Length: 294
Image 1 (cartoon, rainbow, N blue to C red):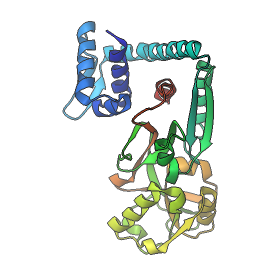
Image 2 (image 1 turned 45 degrees about the vertical axis):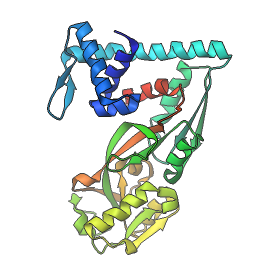
Image 3 (image 1 turned 30 degrees about the vertical axis):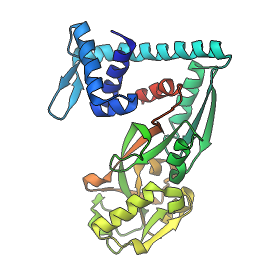
């Protein structure tokens, strides 16, 4: 048993996927399977139940996972402290954040990281979704938070899912649809729509436009806003319907706004913490540990 096996086990246990575990640890899927196999052989226990398209922890795996999480966090702290002693400092980590995404959770996670690694200088930077991935690839930030659509991240980016959410139709309380429990996208044909400007919303706006084409909605009826407060002001004024994650609604919603469930598999969105696939910060593994507790 060695630290690589424990890291691979923790990645699989957290994501319940060999593929996603490989992405987050920068290893191949066969490499992940090999490390897990060696670990199970050394323990004499099956840690995972493997199905045709699924994987889950056994009871032994669940108990083992509870212990490994703390062990790996201690290991990362020791490594960082040792590097700090050798260099005279603990390094720096720059974190990009979006409007309305994990704003109730992120400050506490950053604080916990700073307490665990007191020698590290932590800087936060507000970045729009349109520029988040470019800022990561350019090295302006070490990691950032963003929604991804249809499970796709840009080339050169690694990511870890921290939250799965559903898109909802957001409208004024006096809209004719507001009394319904849910909607299908076909109901939105001919309706005025609201969205962020592409210079701010980036991938989210491209997804919105693709959705209009796929379901026959009139993208020419879309009014674009320069920021989230303006978008939700327009919604409350009855200017149209916006398709947004519930996560954003929790941050900017108000008593004059209603949210209806949207039918269909296309309505799922994943929020990820993302970083550069190559030359990423050595501090990232310790910072990412905190998201396994969300």
